[in-house]
Amino acid sequence: MKIAPRAQLSQEFVDTLREIYTARLEDYKRAIKEYPYSQQVNAYFSKNKMHIAKLISLLKDKSAFDFELTRLRSLNYSEYCIKTNSKGSRYLCGLSFPVVIPIERVKLNLGPYWVCTLVDFLKGCDRDGMQGQNGYRFHFYPERQEMSETRTPHHYGYWQNSETPSSPLDYGSSTCLGGFNTIIYSLAACGDVTEYLRNCFIYINRHSPGDQLRYSTIRSFPWAEVV
Image (cartoon, rainbow, N blue to C red; front, top):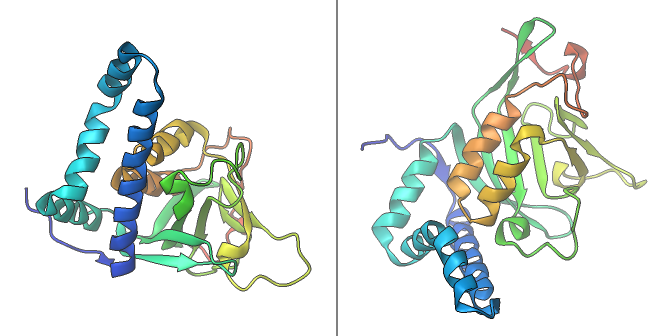
């Protein structure tokens, strides 16, 4: 299969991918050691063996890792990098192709979006401090108006302090993943960053008026163009 490379990947992004793969493989190893009975170990391994084998291949086989980078370049993103907020938290980021969403019987071109995910979440390291919330894990914001609190129909940023934030990554965020909740979290848990980013792009292009968190009017997105 030949895929023309498109997106640019920073070296820091590539190095962080290896961090994520390593951390998730260690999660699997740790879980296997914690089971007291061989039947439980066998059942767990059987359920997750494809994910485990892929992570081992990505970490040990250069050709497999290079192919995964090619797959990333084939997604609907033009750039991949690592961004850091004012507290030093790192985010794995991709700049998407233009997002187009149907709202009020028209299609709105919202332009490219930064899709940013907390690296510690992708590594599985933020579970104790962020159990049951996603307030800093996800930031999906428009390149045209990065500091907008309204971001997509189902995701917004918020600021509760008196000081003005210096970066969109300093905001808290509220995200209604709807039907994407299971797949987003399961892909993060198994370390499949490529498929995770693929589904994030699909997610930010959706508008489901029945979801609880939604912005469903054109005026919510003043930077958008009607197409």
